[in-house]
Image (tube, rainbow, N blue to C red; front, side, top):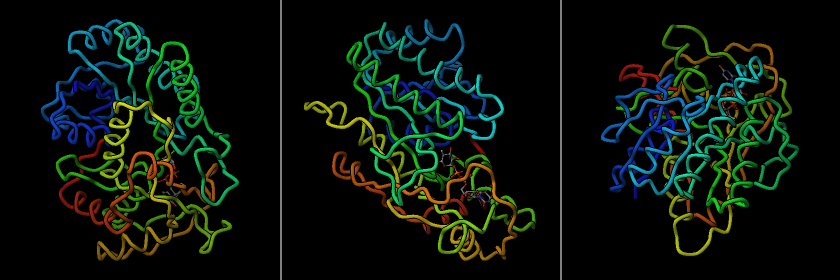
Length: 327
Ligand code: UFG
């Protein structure tokens, strides 16, 4: 297959690109390199382009036609919750506008298959202990809104012109699948803790008074390599002979870990003194966000192979190899 991967120079995208190349697909990466890095796309071809730019549609249509692309995996997006609260217009322009540009080009070039990076942020503050894909979606920040609107747009394109799509709702992605791809940017819990420890500082816990067993927030941590494999399973589902039976999938492990458990595990794996200091709650954090991952298991035959220990061991290994951070 010839697959166009937007955002393929980023943290998750680069892992997927490697797997696609290994299984013999032709891969064209489109990335604006604002947070990603060109050296991580390996033998894929790279086109530097912001998919949300005004003139991106024509360039995308041309590359889809010239390279005989049959499917698109769309990662390119902004992903910082706090930034999305400050700059909602820009987030909608980047995340929804970028998706609309890619779909316009796909429709014009008659490319009908897309996998979309969605997020557990679509659920907001869910009422349930574990969230299924049918749990009500009430995102609480513009980032989560843009991902939900993206899913709606894909569904509308399916109705309008037969788009064949899947949306993967990622839970808390962490770890390093390939040492050569480096670490993720210091935006999330695991890299933030490692970063503070490396500087001789204490890790921070944002709030210890949540209604959870140890008072800290619970999340479903998914290894980036497992997540990458989920994309291949979704692609196989979309391109199989039978019509896809589901479009939206939670990608998580089905079990949660608290902030304190994660920090303790980092201390054990690294041998560093990871005693944390407790700070105020960070606004907008749901106490608990854990996937019911049964649909992706039943329909795609995918399940996570790596638990929290593997995630932390791989992150620590990559960290020791020298921080090369990608967004
Ligand atoms: N946390 C700390 N200390 C830190 C960093 C984080 O206590 O130094 C806490 C947060 O308050 C939160 C938990 O660790 O309770 C996880 O925080 P992250 O920032 O790692 O991740 P979030 O759950 O806030 O969000 C992540 C992604 C989102 C995505 C969401 C889906 O950043 O883009 O997972 O579950 F939508």
